[in-house]
Image 1: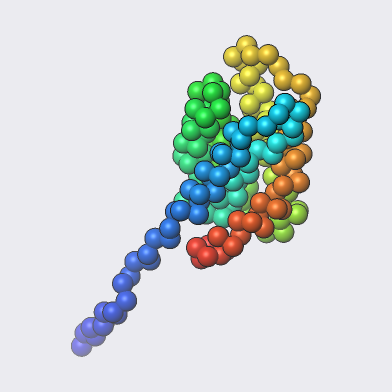
Image 2 (image 1 turned 30 degrees about the vertical axis):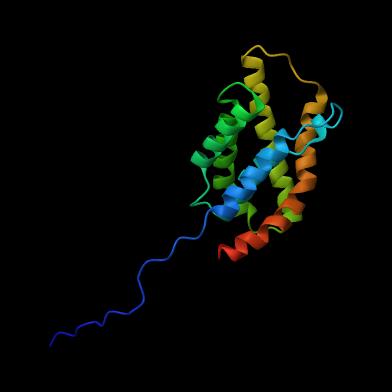
Length: 172
């Protein structure tokens, strides 16, 4: 005798979480990147867009990944007037590293994650420096590397600000 399974009244699909917190944080990060400042704090500005991409790659690897890094990088290239593809390549590689290293990094608290994030930020800076050198642009000063250290300091703060959105989306 065959048994017939009853269909449940609940839908079998999971409703999609909203994308607006991710888009809002990436838009705010790009705005903070192009916010006009005087000359002296320019090199001490944290890499807001890279930090936002890293956070969302750690939090939602199925929604934010290499393609998102590429698209945001292209938008950042247009906004900053940089060589088209410079930030796109750097953010794509950064997103790839974040996705590959995610299982190893995500288990640590944010203040310990900051050291791994600093290594990824240094890799991003090194890749950008390589692009600058390959295109014949003038080499930046040594203060060019400070933004990775500032990113190390800002990572726990940024994680603390974005974790409520991650939890609200049911991702954390």
